Image (cartoon, rainbow, N blue to C red):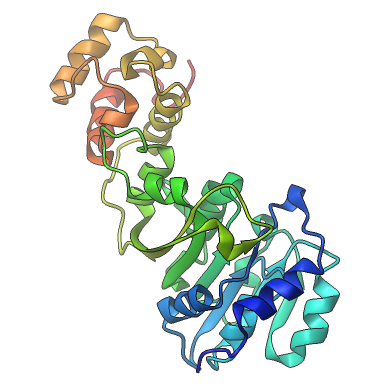
Length: 290
């Protein structure tokens, strides 16, 4: 049953708190969209949902109404006592930095995760939940889905296709680890303080298996990192760490059916994997700097 708390009530409560800019605090005060986020989780009494950064507990309140077990990890030490006082036994409130929090320490391990994610730590949070390329997190097999509110620009990156400006290292990380569904936009006035950007809610579902397997995952990851670090340069110019001459790199890119003038943003994850495998046959120490 949806919470009866209105937007006006939420914004009045939010205005009484001094949001910390250094923590990226913008409190979600849009009652209708909070209900839609809860609906997107499809929670039942058998679920254990982990909330990232509950803030003032507006979403937490709605999560507890579903009957699911609720655990929330909050970084702001000033908010933790207030949250614990408000929710009591309805939700477990943990004071910690989510990026350092051992999700596997919870029993049972949460099967669903939700949160309003600060722009600058979207990639680290996704990696903490699902793992890195070639290194799944120890708790990822237990996670069924992640619903997160992110900047609209981040949502575009997650959903981007090769050859577009939004296509990035985050896109490839997503392609390797999970699938993403765009749910809805969130206008700036859904938050207090009001940010200067539009946000979006996305639902992420772990893939049953990675879409590619490489001979040398270190090399594959290194190509991705260097390629997107200087994304406006041609990819072949970012591969100097391989210590192969340009003519050889051009030849091997053509063997992989990749345009030698291509940038990192032009390659699909499958093309990156194929190029990595072909390059690994021609270097003495794959993935190393030597």
